[in-house]
Length: 241
Image (cartoon, rainbow, N blue to C red; front, side):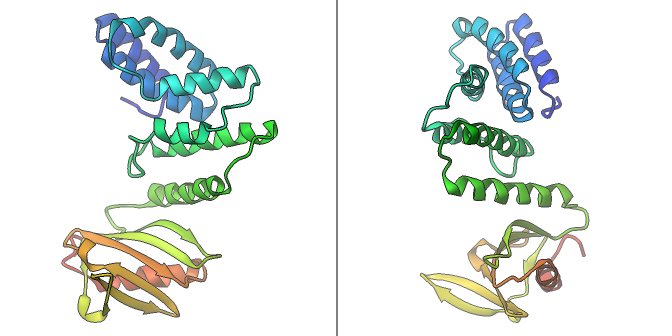
């Protein structure tokens, strides 16, 4: 099943409805609604609304996303302001979708569409939302270009203005003998310095499959590439060797 095509998901929902598999039908309508809204296909949302209304009395299975995106779509089509707590409602609706999921990019697209609608309606958007969207868009770009067959470091967020980068290394531990080991709040960290940047690795989170890191004082993309190379060179017991 192609979870990036709202039309294919909608067709699958209709097939399950005809078979009497109403829970499954709602499941596919849920995903179709997220993707359709993210892409701006509001007509498909209206089609989903019609089918969902036919299923409500046939099952106790509750829609996770469709009912939310139907509500927003109806407000948008009527050119109404969205509820003041719509951002909170959005995150409550999609809380089951994690950043590692390939569908997460549609979560970011959908939120951006909501924000873009709220702005000309003179509705206040929390400042952190803009930073969240920018951060997640950057993360999605990194994930999409990450090649697990050859890449060892995945950058999850970066902000050169603040000099802050977070990421994951995959395929092995880092050589502790090449780190400065410090204890903070009863947790052990490995510290590495690269041209003025300080990389911190929580040792509890590191094992033979990899670990996480954060770096402070990162100046630019070239500096980040040096940090990535340093991490790669310190990797031991890697599946890639």
